Structures are given as structure tokens and as C-alpha cells.
Image 1 (cartoon, rainbow, N blue to C red):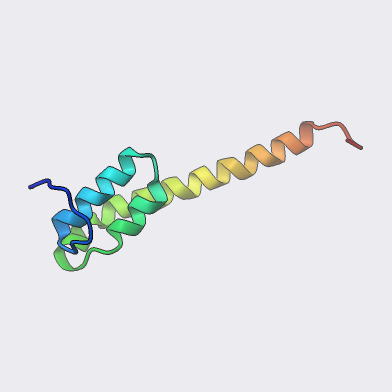
Image 2: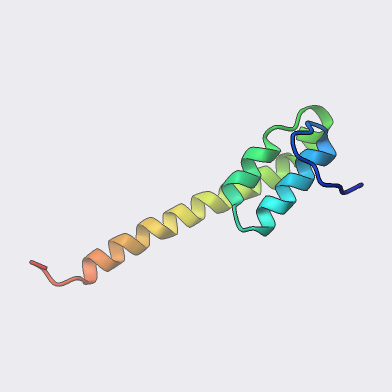
Length: 79
């Protein structure tokens, strides 16, 4: 796959390159959004990764919620 400095290019290579760059910066939500712009065979090829990424997001959100609940349960009553 060729890699270049893609900006607004809608080609699958450009979309994947942007998603990789975004993911390396740590933004899974934005990488998912970028890959959701794929269509046809490219979208089909990305589907398993997108499914796994969505599952990871769900797990991270659940962990964050559990953390908030755990902290609230550990806090003394009345504080």
C-alpha cells in the first residue's frame, strides 16, 4: 500500500493512512469514524477491525463507569 500525506482524498488508501495516523495519536473514536468512510470491498475488509474496535470502546466505557461506581462506593457517606 502506498503511503503519502493524504488530506481530503477519499481513496481507500488515503482513508486507511489517515486512520492509522489518528490511531497512532491515540484517538480510537476518530480512527473508527475515519474508517467508516470506506465503501465497497474496502469497507468489507475493514469490518472485522471496526467490530473489534467498537467492542473495545464499549469495554473501555464500561470500565470507566465501573471505576466511577467503585470510587463512589469507597467514599465515606456524607462527603
